[in-house]
Amino acid sequence: MKQLATSNLEFQQLVSSSNLQFQQNMTATIQDLKVEIGQLGNTMSELQSAGSSSLPSQSILNPRGNANAVTLRISSINNYPIAVSILNRLDKETRL
Image 1 (cartoon, one colour):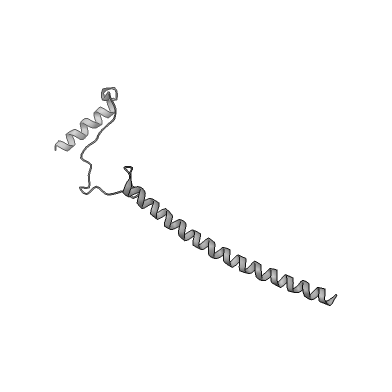
Image 2 (cartoon, rainbow, N blue to C red):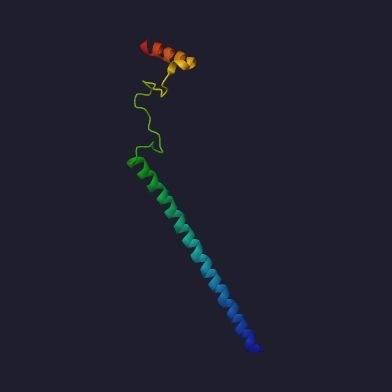
């Protein structure tokens, strides 16, 4: 009976030690994955802004500091009197 109790205690200690080692390994693996995911996100952002025709994730300031032109994609601007008045006012302001 004493031998069975000793064997059971040794087994519990072995399982406890294995669980602790497993937890430490998992914690280290999760930290590594967090770092790699962060690096992957940075790389993807750089690749998207460098190699595509879409807008970059980081906006680039206009070096002149103002807008010089307004373009609309409306085929018939006369159907929108508010837009016409705004464009006329902007045109007058830029002529000054």
